Image (tube, rainbow, N blue to C red; front, side, top):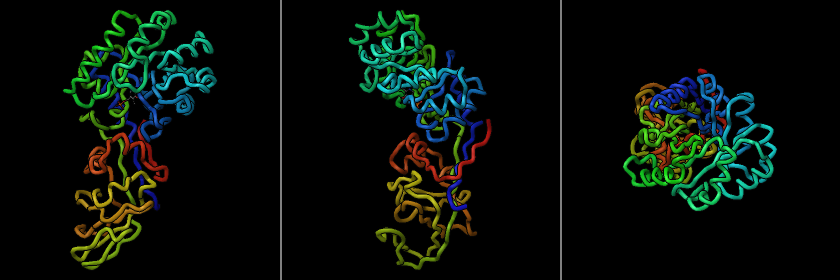
Length: 345
Ligand SMILES: *Cc1c(COP(=O)(O)O)cnc(C)c1O
């Protein structure tokens, strides 16, 4: 086998959902957008449904096709981008709940799909999606009379517990929604960890389910091993890879492994990443190519047949840090070429 082997542990996803659910006294949904953060939305959604999850969120209506297919008609599937032009058929046929985020969307939805469920998304300061205070004031009465399933907003800085934006948004959300009888939701993974005043009636964790920060106590979900294609000895002074970007300062053994930027191993990791042979760190040397990486295995006593990029020695977030990004991006960029092995249920 010449492609990387990506192992996805669905039992760990379920354990993470249970752990996050256990931190609140309210309902806990699951966010499975972007193909379940790159891990396969059908498998993830099925495993979570079996564990009792009854409400799922996707970013856009198209993503709900796979999720509805996997789950059947019962569970609620909510769409963060709301009801966009061209979504009407999908929303009706798949029984989706759009989170309407503007006066235009609200008007359009009530016109073309009256009596069809919907939710409302409010903007409490992030300035990304949702009705603002004044817009909401203008349409709240009309919208609430149609009995929305949920009124929600999203925190911009929840991964920084001491950030003043958190209490500010909480305050805005309360000002906009106190006294309504519709269920409310403010917290994603970070918001759950901020404490009970952020929980309201429903939380919407995504990254925490998949083992990522800010959920520090998450069970790791993925492991990624890359097979060694070739090993060569390189003399002191010889160069490796495109642009001669690395030069050996000692007689070295270089392993060429299968995996590159086409698999989501970003080029920023050139000369920065570390792979592992068991506990032994093996530095990536030279540039990341499209399909290959060159790794210094001089300090490995035996001949490795694979090296680990994500695993016990290096989490998704460790790798993200080396690549100057966040765990979310590492996960959602995981390559389509990998041989995926999903286990658990
Ligand atoms: C992505 C997203 C979530 C999930 O966020 P995590 O940080 O991954 O837990 C929740 N709500 C909205 C609106 C989102 O866009």
